[in-house]
Length: 212
Image 1 (cartoon, helix red, strand yellow):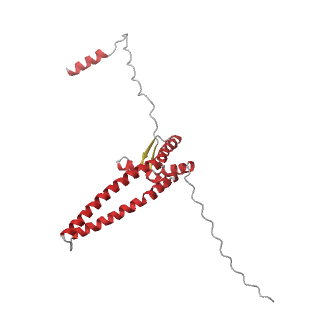
Image 2 (tube, helix red, strand yellow; image 1 turned 90 degrees about the vertical axis):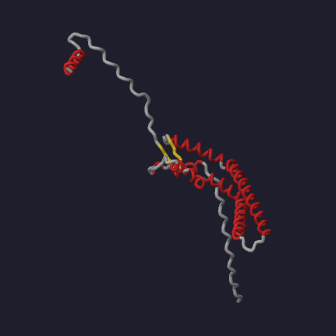
């Protein structure tokens, strides 16, 4: 019965001679849009600080500006560590001496934290003032560099690695040094100071010619 029912159903669907054939169903429209071809590159921003002349000059200036503050904080850290060691060992200290040293230690720690926070806040402000315009120019130049070479996506290598988004990149995908070379060529940093000419060697005294 199942076979008969199946044959009957099939026959019922078979068009009889002379019968009009149903119109074929229209094909679904093709999926739209051309898929763009991706060209991905990797760049490591950390190298720009030393390799791009303009940026290195700005950071060298900031380093010289904040060196005295850094040395002051380092000296305070040394003093704090020395006082902490004496308090921990607590040898030959009377109660008044111990209290006095504790007050000095706590006061120095507070002063150190205040100076460090002030120095960090000022450093961020000065970095934005000095390096900010150059960093903005570098980003614009990197966008133009990528467009000229048909690069559709640039990944920051260190950030991508840290986020687990970059496991492997072929050597040719790292455009860092090529971009640095092109940027330095178009935006030369301050010219290095010309070396001073060597001082002329002192003239060797000629021996006196003996008189006849």
